[in-house]
Length: 151
Image: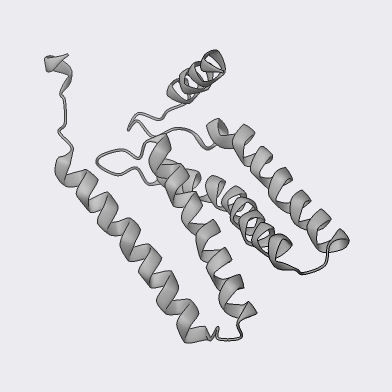
């Protein structure tokens, strides 16, 4: 397991752009895994279970997994195409992809309770965006650039 994770980290490091952001292709294996597990699990869950308590929580979990699989390549491409200072590392990109999964699951939960409105969708989306913006702002304030002469 340690060998597999270190090989994956080496692969991510080798596929970085000059700013230090990993390539979108570095996230292809985990994206495919999340998509297959999430959407496949949702297909099995919806087609073969009754909507009782345990399958309902599995539904929300699988929605997070499925939409994280959709959001991960988008977050990776946006960060690769528009590099920031400090560069977005793999953990930041995974966190940003996970926000889409949590957002979709929150919307599904609110729709289940029949309280979801377009205004609430917008407020929730802006709130998640603001949380990520503040997290990146904190990372930016703590980041120190190391020049090539200091290495």
